[in-house]
Length: 194
Image (cartoon, rainbow, N blue to C red; front, side):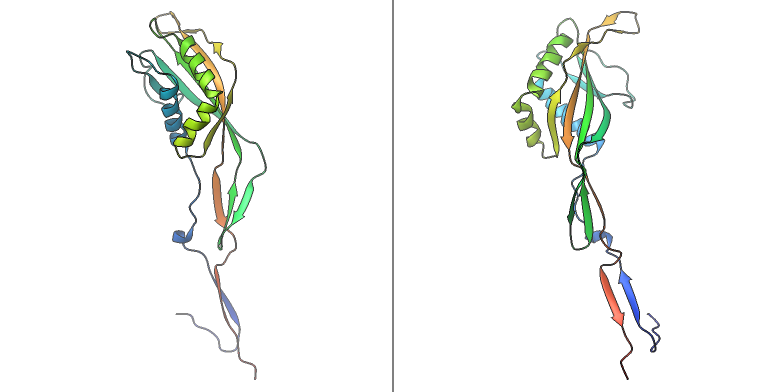
């Protein structure tokens, strides 16, 4: 209960509650990796073997048996000024971003890395990739990939592995929200004029 002095005017501000925060278009790194994995398994059909897709650096798993693909997000760049929209209580800023992702393809005697990376690049740089990503219902759009290259790597037994790599670029639009004003509602009480 507020104690209001009858001789003064007061203004009270009420901030928006958490339930009133608008739904935002957000996609976290785990979702990005899952979407990319779905695409890879469609883009690189393999008969007679299971294609394993792992995330690089922080995957906490040992190297799987080939054929497999290591996917690593390298960096994110803002590619234009953010777009702003407003609700009654919040300001929503959309960040137009380019996501740079590296792929390393590891093959074996039956399924060569060159064949896998070639299938990826041809499909990723085609409109087919956009159609596939549109089906996943998230705001992640394939742009283009660089040319692939041979990546000679030596394994634990001192043998060269069959490995090719390529860098691909995506566009996505994560949003962030903030209270538009410090108050949602004003309650004003004034002293009547005499």
